[in-house]
Length: 455
Ligand code: 0X9
Ligand code: CA
Ligand code: ZN
Image 1 (cartoon, rainbow, N blue to C red):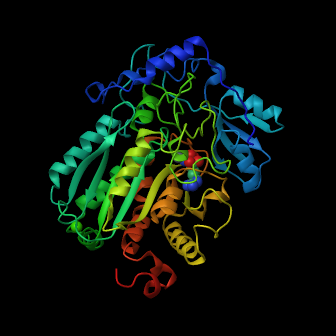
Image 2: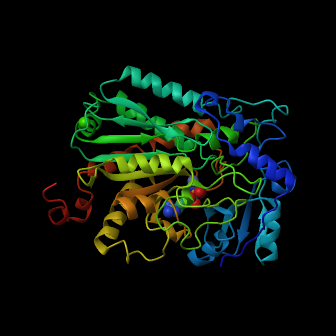
Image 3: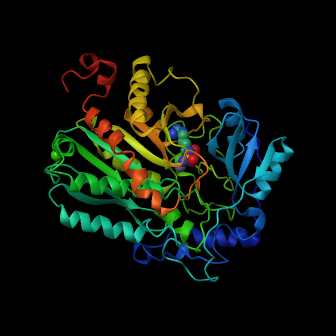
């Protein structure tokens, strides 16, 4: 059993609030000002998120030096943001930090980021604060995507594949020559923004959309890729969380989605613990809705996870999954990670030696292009219900997780907008290599003949 560091704290008020929030709003109410996304002192976060003991901060925890020790710490439900040789940086609130101290951890609070002055209570800020306005809000990203679709209709198309809990559209953009036809070409999936505070990943998706459209016909590599692949980009898996994170005028350090939880005022599920493969199996997620890594009440309980799971399954054509490779973008730590996250074993059930070697070889190749550190994700700490484990374990997609800039410090989840151009372009080469390899990923270990004949 994982140590529960905090019990439920349901009050009558909290129960009423969560009931009030439980009704999903309609699409018509959605988009810019969903009812559930109101800001201010009474913001549902839950009810006591205005309590200073419940504000998230980053803490340095000294001691954990092995994957097992980090998994034990992560099993308390805090998120691990940085991994160092003999310490980690976590996100937790004061109550959780106190509990960790009681468990014997050495815990030191790190200074909060200087953020803009909060908006007046009850008002809702629509843009990022000064120094961050180069980041795209959901509305700005939607507008930019629509402009690109209008400009490049022959190679870019947009589908609404479903809606978030609060009713925002979840999009899948397809990029390919003859984009309106489903051709028999290898498909590659890029996803971003499962975690609300990881705004740089939306910029990564927008960068890829801009690059792959504007360079078609002039850049020979991009041209060849669009001529021979079908690329899917889901630029924002957690639009509700992203909007909530910026809505008060100061960053809330929010991670989860914005789905209420029954019987508590605590809001949200960690989408990257909610996927329906070995969900909750292995002490790699939390069963406490108050925790950062709450896995949800059941596998794929989050509408955002359902929407993208259904979309991925829809790419099975003639009994064959068309998507061959994928990257899910996160921040931060500058890592290229591969499955399986639920186990420390590099091979074993669900992963042959050749499959592992293929993952590792391609992962290291990509990491050599962007300077990230390549490793199996469980080298960090065990996770269960993550998207890459589901894509691999359930769909046999060679799925990676990229943890983007910074490697540590430097604004953590909130680097200034001045880094966007450099830190998105930094992954260009890795993305192109993945796309070029997608017709036979096993080529990287020289086993094309064995695994990719007769495709
Ligand atoms: O914990 C996570 O979900 C990821 N780190 S983050 O700081 N972006 O939250 C890491 C996931 C690593 N595990 C797998 N990819 N399975
Ligand atoms: Ca095509
Ligand atoms: Zn993340």
